[in-house]
Image (cartoon, rainbow, N blue to C red; front, side, top):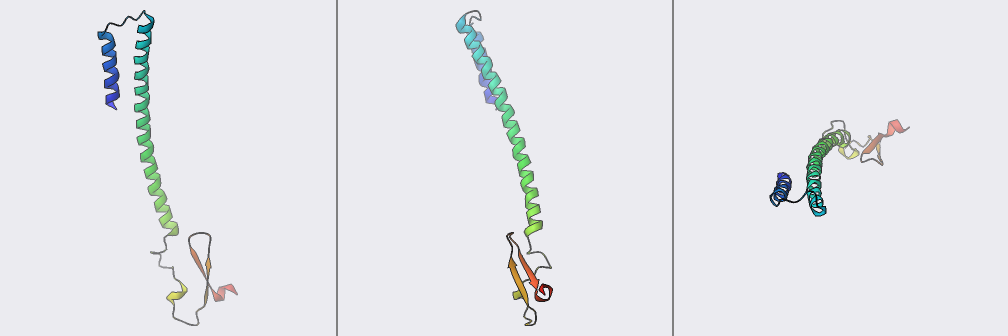
Length: 113
């Protein structure tokens, strides 16, 4: 963003080099335009810095959310997770219930009664 400051400085130097009359209407207008451009450059640089900070913050939140999702919804690594197909025992009966959440609940027949 330094190029913005360089261009505004160039315009200020050009205005001084051309010896623009600060008392004329046109001179006041041109000098105020250059000052306004400097204010815009300051605001743009500040917005770019804030954007960088927000982008970093969102990245941290995304990582934290991924950790939470892995903890809540990742049953692949969970030792207690099993399904009815995992058991060959014919005496073992269970009921699978699909939940609105992305998990599958299994209820043993004995517990249901």
